[in-house]
Length: 202
Image 1 (cartoon, rainbow, N blue to C red):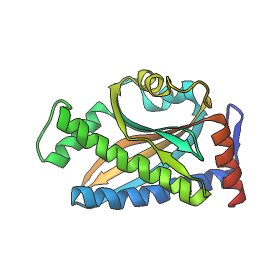
Image 2 (image 1 turned 60 degrees about the vertical axis):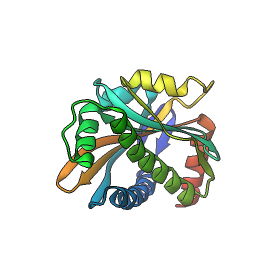
Image 3 (image 1 turned 90 degrees about the horizontal axis):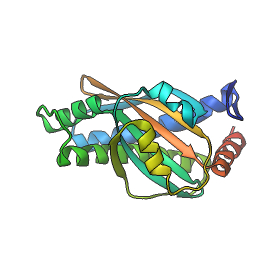
Image 4 (image 1 turned 180 degrees about the vertical axis):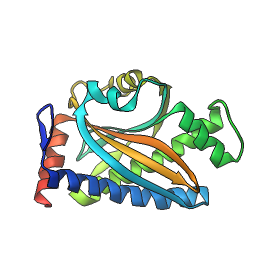
């Protein structure tokens, strides 16, 4: 069992939820391969539901680069693509074929587009598998420590679930691997919808 702040998943439910995100990873791999023009593979080796205040324990306390979107309609909340500044610079350098030590405007645009692809494809996988309409706002990028990023993104939301669905996402481009994370902050009612539809599909 996986329990966090009132959210309980059986191993079957956890496996089913992970499978949804692996479908999203497959779609994201295809989209990134087309964008970059090189073979790209994305895997999701880890999924956990944790209280928001504990997310930092899994992500560390270094500066993060995050691309986030607000989710609306059938599921409401926020979804983030999060990577360290170091891996973001490595990824930017690989894409452009030059070495970069800072994230300039082109770098921010590049990471935003990559994050947009990942967040969109994962949100679409949830939508298709659970038969839930999900609308997404345009992506926004932030470079800061994780608590500041989360507070900035959620400041317009009066109430939201205290839980976050946390995914490890490994991006393999040619022979280089980049560690990143996807975070889904659903509102409380949306979390119930996700779990209800997930159980009905088992």
